[in-house]
Image 1 (cartoon, helix red, strand yellow):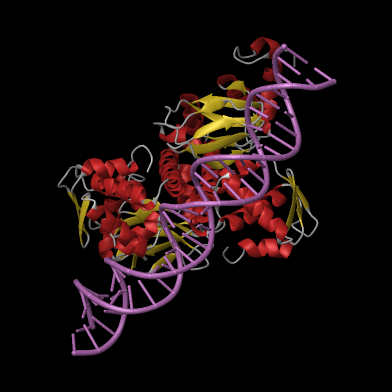
Image 2 (cartoon, helix red, strand yellow):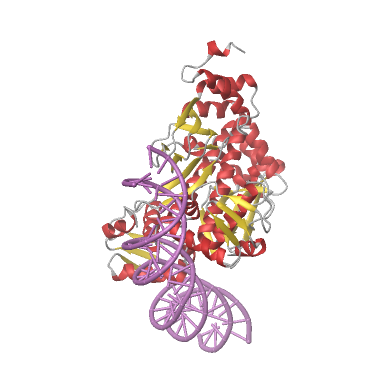
Length: 246
Length: 246
DNA sequence: CGGCTACTTGACTGTGGTCAATTGGTGTGG
DNA sequence: CCACACCAATTGACCACAGTCAAGTAGCCG
């Protein structure tokens, strides 16, 4: 095992040369590779740490690399000329982003920022395309990831076009419950993994409006809100807000 | 040439056995294939004609095939439970749709309807996946197509989140001008390739609102509207509506 | 303790959606 | 060939959702 100390790529630190192939194992996109291949990928890739709030890529910048989140969280968002922010997706560990951008070249279509201290695996454009060409299975997994992005964006369009804010919030709360492995029943507790301001930006609204909607839900006995902790009071009513067309 | 009469696949008519490989040549996705390969693809594919207004796939239906438009037009859209329609994209000849859905399986994420009499090439899910696996170049082209879909959806989200209806309309008019090879100058004439009701549904609004916006633009001397023919009166003002944040 | 940020609440306004009535163009059947 | 039906488009009246601006509170870190 100690041989890694000597063949280790220059742009990663000692501990990362050990851990990166291990981490790749946990990424759906690289899970099919042999250990040998993973070491090879880790060699062309670079691991970089971003501070909380640091910008990773900016909308319209030329595309030069592709990303996998190793730990931490990244938000992908668009900024309007007036400074309004629409969050497209919260990227969690072992998910990737910018594959489509790297693939079609040109400019990144959105911006990305680290939300906490975050480590990313970064693969240069040319190397990424080489792997795609060389490894059919990898190509299929990249396609699977792009297909997921498409679903998410269609869902977002659906939300923006059809639903009012209370329905969007209710749907989001249900999703969060599912992510946290909590059944959406009366009494269930859910922790917001983000500030309410950012939650508002995911829903396509502003914090003032979200605040009002939360107090309305509270008044109506649907939801209790205490800081970032939500407690479901009436799951049926909550569901009613988004099922069959909020 | 006449040999085609005898090796022709059973599910296509005589003329289609001739024309399908020719048409495939014009699809970016199949342009790289040899003539031989194209005949092979045409053999597993089926050509089907849809009448104006006929539904091709319905949101949430199980995925069983992938489509390429040969001639005609197809709209891809979501329907809200209340019956509001949001058009995601107008698919034109030699473009494809549902590749991501076929790829990730499950259910179609949106509906598709033929706008005029339309001929589609339909490739069953299993055959499509076989071609992707067998032909790396084809896989790359499918990825290119998915990347385009992603861009379009991000653009749509941007429009829905940031722009008011006049700005969305102005941007659309500019796009139509570009598509029709017309410079967006004073006096330029653009023909709407769709009804105003459908245009409204692409912009995420309703025909009444679109009608009002058109008459406002007309009043302001920006645009003349005569049926489906638009004449630009003041291109600078039109651009001003969407550049630097409408 | 001071300053920063996140959040809340109030008052106001505007965009744009709904409902309803009317017009005009088009294709169908008597 | 005309009458009718149907659909696209327009216009008016109304109003509600939600965004903006402003003020104030609570919580957190240095």
